[in-house]
Image (cartoon, rainbow, N blue to C red):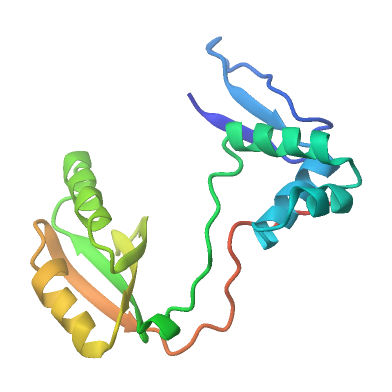
Length: 181
């Protein structure tokens, strides 16, 4: 089943059909839903009372909307943003990984393997010269080099790795831009 999300629709609900007659979920969001999503994305610890105040509704319907947004898959979870450097992770590297084979079983096997490595914080499969872009954190450059040589380049199907050391991060914005009219 495929999800389609419309940010222009008047109210949250389910509708839509595919050309083949299969049911397709489509979530319609109104201004209040978009406001709730934007505010929770900015501050996931916001109380329901504060969230409701900002959305211009009372707390019980706000909580119902949040639950509906969670059930619809628009809110996938909540987390704390931690300070990597304060926890001893002073190096961030973006590794451009090229695989020897792009057959689906080989891609899935690589994805399953990197899912077990805690140093890999993000993984994106790309089209083009690079098959995967990995965001990797390490305590220092030597730690990254050990990870690179003992895990990443030693992994089955890895053909080449090009590492780019992040100097600093000048912008970090979680999620997506949500426009509230």
